Image 1 (cartoon, helix red, strand yellow):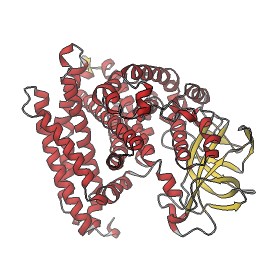
Image 2 (image 1 turned 45 degrees about the vertical axis):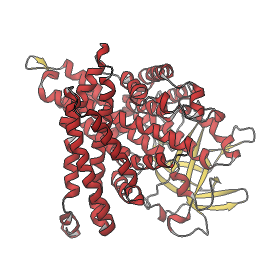
Image 3 (image 1 turned 120 degrees about the horizontal axis):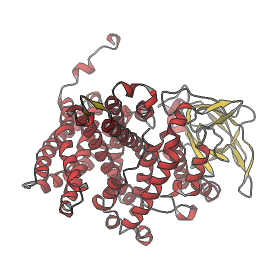
Image 4 (image 1 turned 180 degrees about the horizontal axis):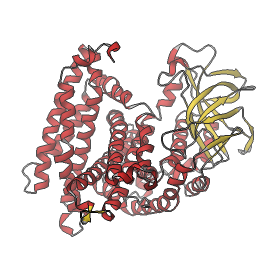
Length: 584
């Protein structure tokens, strides 16, 4: 069975040659001092790739076939998962981009992004544990008191403790304002009562403590989402010396039986069935959503990376099968339709990688330079990354099954697991429909499209850089990317007018608008990759001409999808708006 091998060569190209990380972050003092550059890139990528291939990837099928189970109020994870998490912790991988003062390595987000992609490709179910822990730590880092930071952060970054987000209730999905969980003041802490569902890594036996971030309402809280507060609730209370103490009043009720990510314990969690779970306010009263949204950009980027990681791993498995499977006297990789599917998978993953890593740089610049323009850009791009990557993840892992033919549909080959695992990514951290609404109503409309206009102008600069080129690949890019860009400008203008005059019409086209921009941005970053590769094409490394051909394929075979989504946006949505609900 094919194992996962991180695409280190392409990752290094994107980080050092496309993003030019060292130069781009040179004005951020902390990164300059750390010696960010190609030597560090190679060292980090190689070591992370080794850990993923040797430790995480072999457990992917184990977790699928021997899922996490809940019995007698305790959750047991699949064999090998606890040891893998221990190795991740000992290697400091959860703290790669975390502050040095709390035990992290203090490196740029682009390195954390690459490592997260590797984790997701190697073993998505297992990767959720460190990903969620990083998110919980970020919320504490951003809003916690000094005491809270000193109590929890170093233990989380060291992998000794994990973190979990407790938002959803059975009666409150995306509408958090109607949640029923409550927090009762009790001196210097609170007593939390309520039940949460769909809590990934909500309980397990793979760490000595779990730090829950729980949304709940105070007795006198305002109605709706304005009355939500955020609380730190440890599974085991923390002693004065920093060690774990007695068990808190929080317990798993059950684990969910899911389509995929079986190795990840998705729990129903009960808080305060007895005296109430001890919790500590994180941030201000009734500021829970704003505190939680601090980590949303980072969390949604990582969900997008799960779509990318699963797609790349499925591609690796599919191309290995296509080289071995003989039909008609030749390996099926020689069949035109199989080659089409494989190249679609390859081009799609490389487009996503270039897109994600480029915007990880934006995230660093926004955070460390307090740059409002960079913050507006990353805010605009995050819903596209989360939704387009996860939609592509579904499409490309499905192609991976198709390449295997009937053997892809049976579980023995392991091809179907990538499709089953990645299916959740379009749902959690805000469904992709919610991402589309967020893009149009909160990100595009808030500045009248100014940030988007700036992004499209950057795309134009790349189109211009390819103009008049005698290189066939760059000439093809100039034509295709220019056409898609023109369509995106029309769609953006249409959406803005609709949002002003008829918001329902704008929201009816929001998903297609998001997908249009996803394909466009993927094409733009592949075009940038092609320009960088062309500068190095004469050095004899086949990687660079391959990159040029991959970009050309994307422009000719995948980018036209951007124009088709744009046409939907430009069409009248009356048929959708006027369709009676009772007809459905």
